[in-house]
Image (cartoon, rainbow, N blue to C red; front, side, top):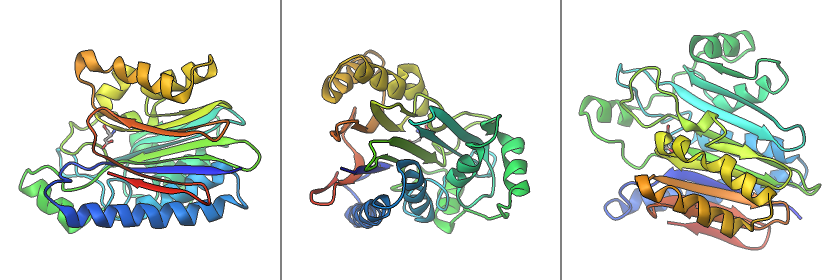
Length: 281
Ligand code: ASP
């Protein structure tokens, strides 16, 4: 049995821009199908890197190419990877000019210092063969110059369960746009991206809310302690309510159950298990 679910972040104007919404749904379906095929002869951890790289390469999403621009006019991206078989998490925080931040996280899996930030992350990427690559697209620059919210972007993520029962998770983001330089996204923390042998979870939404709610780590812990996925989501999302936390999550447990939930319904996601395909928003 193998399962996969991916997300393309929040879709802020689904009611006003149907064209972008349909384009995102089609892109997610194409990528989830391609990645499901990949999963048939690759491990869960290889597959989440593969799927997340495809999402980073698609300018429709706010990760890799198409990332949002920070308050000083520069793009800084964050991504992380976790493998349930080793319980290792690796990631980059605020890395610059790299086409696929998730692939830098993949290299970091085999290094003692597994989560790097800022210049250190960018230097590490260059030393490991990642060429300088501008991920800026004209649309994001236009939005930045007009000081407008980005249109239709969103963090990306993937959870996979492979045929040997291994779970892995990856999340990648261009951040929330116009952030203060040095701001840390949830995407390379255990709040935004976490798994173990029982369950894997990837988040999108307002990074500060996701960190306050320790969302991914809490859901995984609850499933480990015997909650169903649904119960774990319900309790964890209820805990976001007192501060109106804005978050959306996707998950798979060790039995192949797939689940997703968002606090303000507008997340785009797609899942596929070889037979049943679901795309939503
Ligand atoms: N979680 C990301 C962040 O706050 C943004 C998003 O998911 O769209 O950096």
